[in-house]
Length: 147
Image (tube, rainbow, N blue to C red; front, side, top):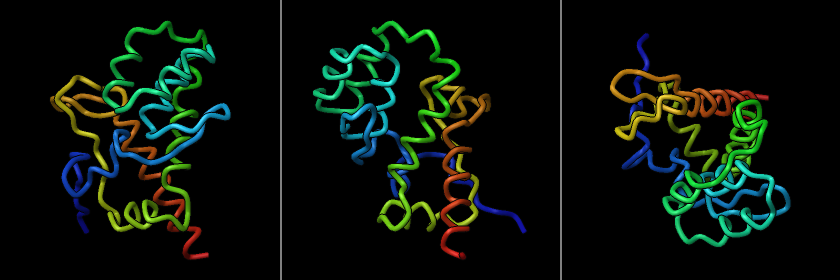
């Protein structure tokens, strides 16, 4: 049986995007979105993290994140940090967890036009780490639900 593919985290699937407003915590600070917390995780400087926390929109956080010096261990920690943030966003028993489960067995592909080939797929190229993490979380939620 062939499963559907969700290839854009927009429209009815916008909630899958890191730009979706959902409170998550990092280092004792609460952020408005996974994007904001992820950008804050790029640094260990508490003052910069507070500046990111204060930014009004996820897009502003993303832009700000391009200008900060990355922590030395960033390549090693970015996947586990994103997993933690997504697990918070889609915590069992929440409305967002139910929405993620409602995607069934669809393949989640973070298709994009902005060249992100680490977290998504652009022009048919990429690793789709965001989609893979979301599918793993969905499987864990399904297993929890089925006891």
